[in-house]
Amino acid sequence: MLTEDLLAAWLRLTTVIDNQRLTAAHGAAAGEKPLSFNEAVVCSLLARAGEEGGCLTATDLCRRTRILKSQMNAILRSLERQGLIERRGSGTDRRRVELRLRPAGLAHYRETHRRIRELVDRLVAEMGEERVAVLLPLLRQAADIFDAMEVA
Image (cartoon, rainbow, N blue to C red; front, side):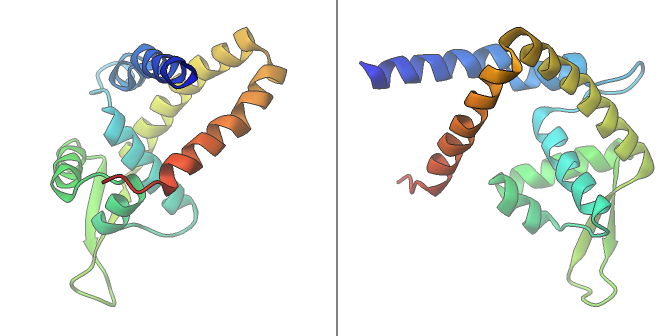
């Protein structure tokens, strides 16, 4: 019964959060196309890499997100069409194509992130910091366990 209760709670949480609605409804400023959930994840990784003075490749992004290469290519084409990312050849390896957020992409991502943070801040306010502090390590542990699982 515990397993079924956990599964039901997990499914309800993921349904309520509805990643598309989270980024789409709260992630775009006036006149901007909202980022899809996967676009927001990719922009997040590219933003972090840029802050650290680096860049990522499509292969790096696939490995970090576990998104299939064909899906990643579609995400990158969409971001490129929107003018949010750029692809550059590596100065040391012409086979390597590096991806970076353009200034407009970074601004769009930051606005999306800010709006999502407002929602998370509301959750913390409703639950209370103490309860969230208890929940956070449990969520991280659950993610680590799932991450280590080999699924056939």
